Image 1 (cartoon, rainbow, N blue to C red):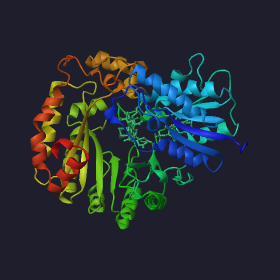
Image 2 (image 1 turned 180 degrees about the vertical axis):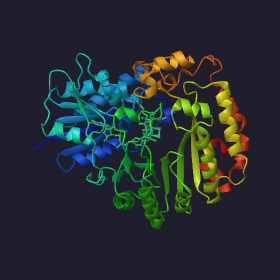
Image 3 (image 1 turned 45 degrees about the vertical axis):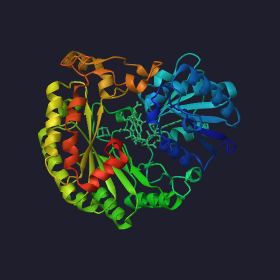
Image 4 (image 1 turned 135 degrees about the vertical axis):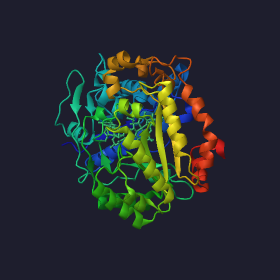
Length: 465
Ligand code: B12
Ligand code: SF4
C-alpha cells in the first residue's frame, strides 16, 4: 500500500439550480469517506459549492470553471473522489472531472453517489475523465482503489460498493470542520449524521433502491450516543439531524437509543426522519420532553395514492394509525411534521382532495404539534417509477417532460418537477393542489399550539412571522 498517496474528496457544486435553495452545511457523504480514509492516507475535503458557488447560466458556469481550474491547480492530489451525490450535480461533476484530468492527467478519478449508482453509464462516454464509477457505498470501494486492489483500465471501471459494518466504522473526524464555528464557538448549520443505513421499504418514488442494498444496518445505541456526544463536544451545533434514510426500524434498538438520548437532555434541536408505522406510544413517551422534531414520510392522505406509491399494504389502517399516533404525540407536546408529495404519478383531482380532506381532519384539534412539509413530486433516476416509466404512462397517462433533465442547460430544480401525473390533469391545471393547500393555511395556523406555531414560523414559514 502506498502511504504517500494524496487524496482529494470533492463536492463539485450544482449547476442550474435556483440560488435561494443554497445549502452551506457540510456534505456528510464526504465526511464519512474522509473519516474512513484518514487513518490510511493524506486526505483533504473540498466543497466547490461553498468555495466558489452555484452557477446557473452559461456565463456564470464559464466563470465557475475558470475559478475551479485556478483553485484546483493549487492542490496536490493523486486520487480524487468526486461526489455526484444528487443528479443535480451531474453537469458540475463532468466539468470538474475534465478540469482535474487536465491539471493532472495521471490522477485517478473516482465518482460515486446516488446519480452514478442509478445511472453509471452516464459516466462511461468516450473521453470520460473518470477511472472508477462506484455504485452504492463508497468506503470499501475507495480504499480498494487507493490500495491498488483494483486496476485502472482503458475505459472507466464500474465497481459495486461493499456495505460497511457500522460497528467497525470509525467515529467522524471533525478536524476539518471545527474552523466553521461561529463567533460563539458553535457550528451554525444543521449537522447531518447517519446512525443506520439502507431501508427495507420500497416506496416507488424513492432513490434508495439505486444503492442496491435493501436491509437495515445500525450502529449500537452506545456507539450512536458516543458519536453524538463527540459532535456536541467538538462542534456545539444548534441542531443535529439524524438523517438516516429510515430511522429506527428495529424497535429494541430504537427504544434503547431514545432512552439514552433522553438521559442526555441536550439543549439543541434534534430531528429524526422515519416511516409513520414505526413509532408507537412508548416511543412517544421517550420523545416527550426532548427538543426534538420528528419528520414522518407520510406522503399522502389518499389511500389510492398510498397504494400507487407502494408506501404500505393497508393504506386505511396506516392513515388511522397516523391519526392516533399524531394525537398521542401532540398530547405529549412532541413536535412532528408530515411530509406530503403531490402530483406523484397517478394523482388525480380526487386524490388531491382526499389528501386535503385528510389534512383538514388532522387539523380539527387545537393545540396540535403536527405541521406539514408539502412539495411537488420530482422525478429522479433510479427510482422504481423511473425504471418502469412505460407502466405509468400506459396506466395513468403520466408524462415526464424531460426524463433526462440533468443533461439540460436550464433550471433543473424546475425541470425535474415538470411532470403531468395523470390524464386527469392538463399542464395548465397541474398546480391545482397549491391553491387547495393555500386555502387551508389559516386552519393549520389555528390548529397549532403556540410552541408549535413559533417553531414553524421560525424555521420554515417566514411569512408567518
Ligand atoms: C439526508 C438527506 C439529505 C440531507 C443531506 C445532509 C448532508 N449534509 O449531506 C439534506 C436534507 C441537506 C438533503 C438535501 C438534498 N437532497 Co437529500 N437526501 C437525504 C437522504 C434522506 C439520506 C441520505 C443517506 O442515507 N445518506 C447515508 C450516507 C451514508 O450515504 P450517502 O449519502 O449515499 O453516501 C454514500 C454513497 O452515496 C457513496 N458516495 C457518495 N459520494 C461519493 C463519492 C465517491 C467518490 C464515492 C466513491 C462514493 C460516494 O458513499 C457514501 C458513503 O457510503 C436521501 C435518501 C432518501 N432515502 O431520501 C435523500 C436524497 C439523497 N436527497 C435527494 C435530493 C434531491 C436532495 C436535494 C436536491 C433536495 C433539495 N430540495 O434541496 C438536496 C441537495 C443537497 C446538495 N447540496 O447536494 C435525492 C437525490 C436524488 C438524485 N438522484 O439526485 C434523495 C435520494 C432523495 C430522493 N429523492 O429519493 N438531503
Ligand atoms: S421513502 Fe423512506 S421509507 Fe420509503 S423506501 Fe425511501 S427511505 Fe424507505
